[in-house]
Length: 114
Length: 111
Image (cartoon, each protein chain N blue to C red):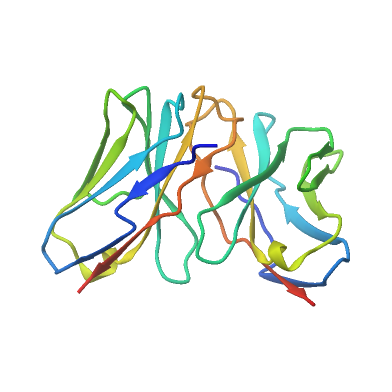
């Protein structure tokens, strides 16, 4: 069965550069979530989208932005990168816009900022 | 969001049952209890969820206290593949559509 696809899987950037992560949800899933997991930390919710509209915002820095496109894929844009942005970024998807369905997570994109 | 409390770590012998506790004394009537786990170097994975009644699926069982202030995730026969961090999460069905991870329980399975 198709899973959540994230790209790139690994990304290395310099401080103050910009990075873009992409997420392709499971087909027919209309909700996308972004999480950040620093080394040894628990996943932290960043932002979510339902039917291409932002549905909730967590601890996402102002330097980051995201959107969900008409084909339901999502992109997380990160600018003015800092060393502390080095982390695993997970995307998850679900269907129906409800709070009872399970989230399906991708394998993550590992961002390293040098 | 209502808070959950879990032990930082637990150990189990392989092929033994494992009971992972979670306290959520401030749970509201619209909170579902969700369990996810995260295996090393992987994204979180859904395990099970419930509202009031005990739930069973192919992965685990969820036992919910009558007052809903605590719950227990039961793995009937732990395998080495079950070594992971297990997260107990409350998700408000009437609130924002997201999932907040707290500090889970790191389960070690001993061969």
